[in-house]
Image 1 (cartoon, one colour):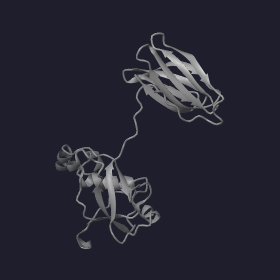
Image 2 (tube, rainbow, N blue to C red; image 1 turned 60 degrees about the vertical axis):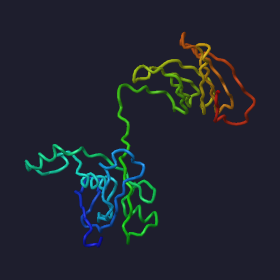
Image 3 (cartoon, rainbow, N blue to C red; image 1 turned 90 degrees about the horizontal axis):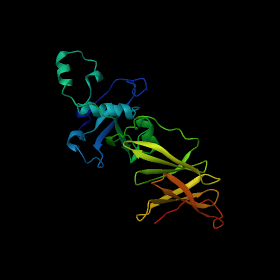
Image 4 (spheres, one colour; image 1 turned 90 degrees about the vertical axis):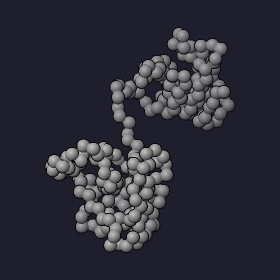
Length: 248
């Protein structure tokens, strides 16, 4: 395709400074990432190069991809025409996209990223795009712990956590929520590793923790009584922090 045939898209400037209409253009090719395995036919674009503002960022590129895919709510456009409203009612909602440039996530303006990667803009840059993973939504209450969570282990509906305060905490799963359970001080230093194992012949679950205090401690949890009690302390065998433990 000759340069005269290439598409040029100039989406609207937003408050994040995505686009400056006076900026020079960079040619890019949008390629759907091979990691996208579902609904590829709904997300794939022609790979012909098109010109975009050189200082465009991820958000602007995402707007372009949604525009080319004819996705987006009617609020995304400023056209009050009734025919356009009818078309918008049948459009799929816009989705955020992430982009890889030379196998690196794009987190800078496009021209800056290309320069940092030593890429020439004389030829079209290949941008691999894929749906972005949205941050988790907060649902319900989240318990605030007094210190950093260093390690976690999930076993049979129960979450074990080891804190920087040397404390083991358990959380029981109830539906889609976790309910706080036992709390016991196990170490004098931050816990660096945790492992748990349920004994199939009894109601006990053994949990082992290693710490920066150079000790390895095991506790036994009785699921019927809901009690966590000391099982054994192993000390003197390590001259440094214990960072890995496994029960089998």
